[in-house]
Length: 451
Image (cartoon, rainbow, N blue to C red; front, side, top):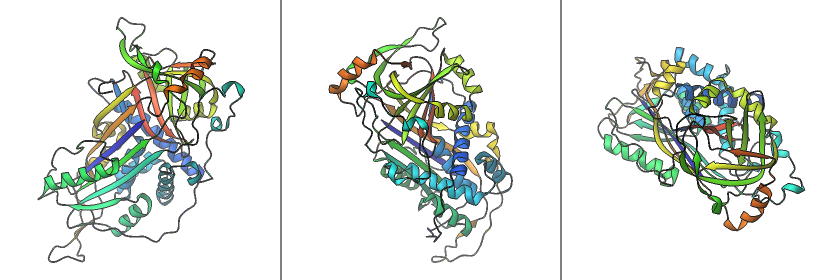
């Protein structure tokens, strides 16, 4: 399983030079504030999905935490209406605590083992369920590790500088890589520099992400990259993967499509919500830190799922996860691949964040230490010209062993619950330590090209 999320945030203003090593005492984790931030990030995921309009909405997958990480950096360097809108988005009025706690959450997200995360954070009850004798036939791999990278990059026009207080906060909380390029005179070289940085962060898993040169007015680009590589805790049985019908509209006249479906079974977290008429299953990854949750109405289609999504809230999702318990469960899930650039400016404007894209005239030119005759320009407030995210997403049986199939097949026939993702469904990849949504998606039709 490999998931990659990338953010491009392009600006038409000036930023800063250099890295400041701020000597700041490490704050303690505040679980109440952290949980509130995580809920706001999940709420953001639901809201921006509702604003996404596509011509062929087969699948939409994006990384909420990567977007919010970029917005947090923007938030430090803005003010007035823009600051007010972003403050409301994060739901915290104490901005110092917001950046401290969000920064600590992101540090725990990238930990490779649970023992390296804050002991103050508690996982949901299903993580502590014991597997009784009837479940011991399932093959489980709970002691593995995951690889998560969350990297922020600031690419700045040569000869620009950020306000000192902004630089301190960004460096202390979000640990960005800072590189200077010449967007205005060497646009191709700037593009290549950014793509090389992306290659380094993703082990060259993505071809050129930035394929167009920059406008001469561009003075900075923020890159926020999230990658997840993890094996399943349970085994999907490679020998049982075969083409099955996927129904976009089971009750209508639309014919089903044939997609490769994986089959697995295990002591999986599961909950049936009779009030919302849906069910949710969790497919954990090794290491007990991250889980893929699948949510599906009991009767689903493209239209029914969209209507269900409109009434779904971050609070209701978290409530369902709290009520999940491990039980003998079988799951049928499509193999999927998603590789696309999402342009997010319009959806963000429709959800009330248009102020961060407004033209800005508030540059402050200050004298600063110069190299030769090249004076540094200092930015006091800034705005955004474009906001994009590149997603590479792949789900398969990777990490399974064919020889482990027999026991799982025998127990699966007596599974207490079955989750068949053969109709449109919602996907949430969640860091269960911090409750942050790493990836969120609506699967109307699995994309299988290139698998």
